[in-house]
Amino acid sequence: MHPDTHLALHHIRAAHLRNEADTYRLAKATRHPRSLRTRLGWTLIEVGLRMATAPQPAAVIP
Image (cartoon, rainbow, N blue to C red; front, side, top):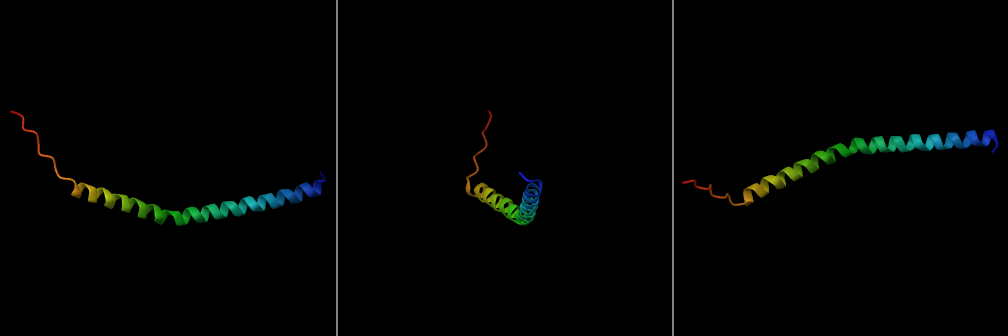
């Protein structure tokens, strides 16, 4: 392969990888609120399940 062709392909691939890295970084930055929302949702479900289950009577030890 001619060196100039190889260099041009290298520059194209490097630009593509930089673009993917930027896209990943932006997606990761926007994912954080969704994570908080998910944790809050599961916490609310847990609280609701605790409220919905009947408490078990304590065992009496003679």
